[in-house]
Length: 323
Length: 277
Image 1 (tube, each protein chain N blue to C red):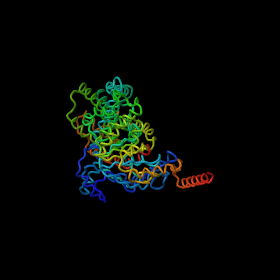
Image 2: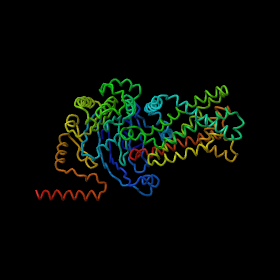
Image 3: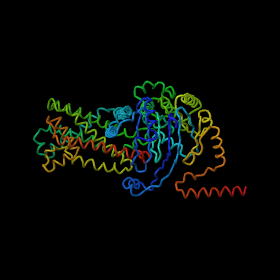
């Protein structure tokens, strides 16, 4: 940012401070509802460089937030996990048993009580169970974050109001927490797959590539919902009705191939549906997931992440005043 | 302008938005560019200040004058409505009593989070943990949930965390009010030594503390800086004003017209009192 303080910036840039809280709020409040003031904090950061660098940095802003505050994010995450797992007598057992019970009941209902969809019915009950489990894990991530994100700012209101807690890190913590629960379920799934079908296909190694866009998507979603949810609690009530609907609109209990052709496009347009199908392809089928869907998912995730972060940054300045 | 400023504010202002109804807030968010749905309450307006590195500054003023809002702006907890703030260095704020503690967590867990908020690494925090526990001097209670703490114990822990943050700027807002004499003495000694390496900002109603610790005093009144300068000089002005001015609620009015009417009424009352007396 050029301005009367440029000389000063350069003078400061030569001083070294331990990193961690270093922040560059470059016109962050710009465009906020009533916030036109600016706040700059620069500690040992070189801010030279052309427009291209600045633009690149802005595109990576959602990720650099996570990196800059990694120590804090991990500290909060560690405490939340400890809370969950050591707060209850059988902490880890619940995390494993929970998804197992869900899976057992769903599989029982859908294979015995109801008619299976055509494509899914070709396989055995066990392969149907595994495919549903993959769907449930990915959808569980989404559902937990959807329900929690609108309340995220309220949950930490005291911290945000009385300390210099960087509110944008809460999305990272929430996503990482949900991922760790999903990780436990994933472990259970792997054990089941080994027991039922033997070694999983090699394509399972592609899973990290699928995880990256999924995390970006969830991050963007959490930022967006947290910002909106801070203003009104209606969003969280809305989510209670919205999430179960999405569950049936998403191929959790069926495969995309069960749908008629016309509807398949719609299922792939749903980012969750794509995510679940990619995960199934990589983990169970051992085939390359549909390339166009993968590419579309990646582009959409980047857009959601960037957009969600932009919305959050825009309202961040006044969030503290409204919660 | 000196290049050694730690904090510099120009034309700083903060208006809180007061909404009559909860729904107005949503309307403001959606249609804010067409119509204003809130009343503005300017807590601070047109504040220019500069603090040099190594300076220690006391901020005084009546309740509701805007001291705490000023500190919150300096810390970056809220964003200014207008104006600019430049802060060079790491801030450790000891704001409200007990500050941001999670009441269900133990003192030790709170130290981990609180120090991480201030920008310390986990390894650094763990290395300093014994020293923090010793400074707070709350014995085995450091392993108990914070909800069991007394106000004094919370403020001890909060101060201990900030004292170990290796900050460049230390902000202390009435944090010692509930500490006992022994702890206060320890904190004063710490602040005295901190003065030599960093910038110290104290908000307090204890004029003795200001006299011992500060080089300069800023008197915040009615959302602006009423006086700023040497300790003795500003404190004298402040004492005179405290004696002369009534303790009324006029400054809390957010409607300019109502405020004018009230202060007119107060002036009339003073006049009649003077006449009858």
